[in-house]
Image (cartoon, rainbow, N blue to C red; front, side):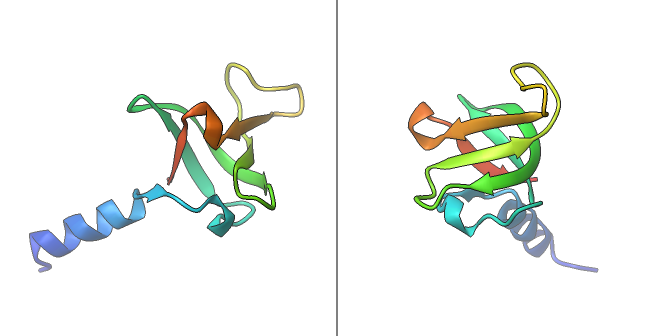
Length: 82
């Protein structure tokens, strides 16, 4: 049986905030968080060279007909791995 602390630390590491968006890989699942609420979730389609912009492929409100949505760090959103 694993220690409770080890399980919790692994869980928090998995859902930790992604500070450097350039480390994201295409196809990786992420959640977009703003004001402590998940506003979108999906797979990374593309990350800008600067690491300040990410395109997600998902379904939901605000999504283009191609199923993609753009998120920018300057909009105050954070990403976490899902």
